Image 1 (tube, rainbow, N blue to C red):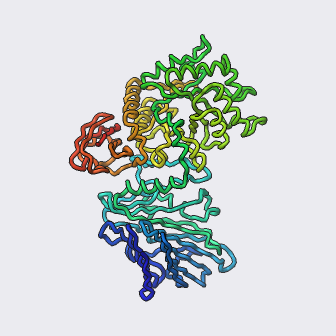
Image 2: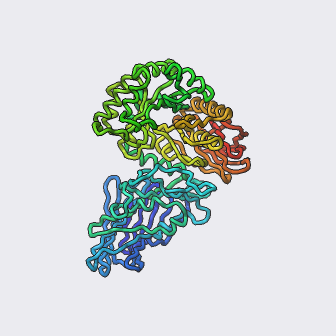
Image 3: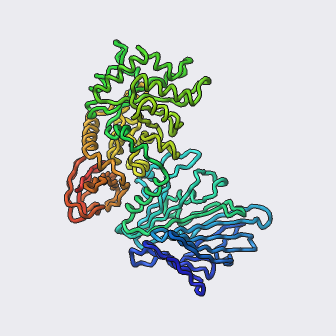
Length: 608
């Protein structure tokens, strides 16, 4: 509902989750923005914006109201206020877009007509945003770039790595009550993937970088306005009744609606979902190669893998770091293997007899002057065809030409593409269905990978190649905490980096737990960093899609055991709780979970 009182110069906007009162009697202020699930009046008497220009601060009160227009169609309602400052030669357009259901969008557009014929620096600040709250007393805040940091100050949610361009996973700002129920989700929609301040028109990319209360309070966004209203700021606000869990699920739905994930639903590719322990080995390394017989000793490699619970896949690497010593390319190294590609085919067949899948690598940077993208794709498809391998390990890659996928499909269905880096762009993420969850920082806990929870069907095994004994413990905890498979890489370019017997046994146990509870761990709606009551305790929740099971993955980063009331269940109707991984005690009292979580350990609690 939208109601315009021209005499009072106010606009009332309501939907199922929000109620807002806009006052334009002196500039534009938010008199109220309330969550309709609660009774608290929120965000009262807030100036919507400040502009900094030529060393001075201006509010909306420094502009005169030129016009107010309201309108609606079957799904949305709109109120637009046009403001003007003739002295500054600036116009503002402020839009309030109500979807009648649960969301209010506030869109602020700036037009600069260059009062002295020159463009000057301009900055935007919103007091409304800076003091955004539910009741201002015991609110909990979840900042879009980093709402939880570890004791060392590192981000617990690890974003997809950015380079020149920005990835499109931008979490919302969420504010909730102390029970993590009633609150708001405030998203900053950003269609641009440009990080350059001068070339992007949607300034929200700056607001998605907010990582603390101080940054929220003091945000200052540079504008590059001209006379076309091309610079804009947008707030998308939704009322919540189930806190952070609801906000994250809503965001995941919004984000995924821009994609076509039909590739992930293909049955011929889903064999990868049944794989929990992966191995990375070298064709020429002593871990797998028998130098007397000049062949890969499949039996020896798989026998050693039994200590980890058995390898489900093996990536067999042949080229780098030997590439470059002569004119041979990656394809030549496969031909030069003793027995050539026929021997590789025999090796693959032996792995298949033991129900182990085989990946062969593709190196995009080994690109000769006589090769094109087309011929590289042909060569890769031919290699897979001649060897019978099951998948391609895309070295250093986060994208691949779609022609490669089509060429492999012609060889046979079910060839899995897995990238070393998470795909960033739309189409690569749609056709590359797996990647490594690889990190180079050995101090990896507490930490989670954002893509694992935004796109749970993109299975990404955990990997860190240079881990020594102490770091391998963290790597195992990392994989278990986020319920991920793991890559075992022990021969790291000739340096032997083995796991201890205790670590192997832990991975073996994890494989059994992961596969026995696969339908919960591979659910469509996992929740990262679910609210808990103890300090230095972190929790992820995995819910079976049919609602039959919830698994609470808990990691205690403290130096002492955590004991007692640790959290409130996501589903209060569950009646039983049991430990399925780790050493702990657990008791369910109503909707509250009581448990003991040892220091520096991960515990999984299944609730039914």
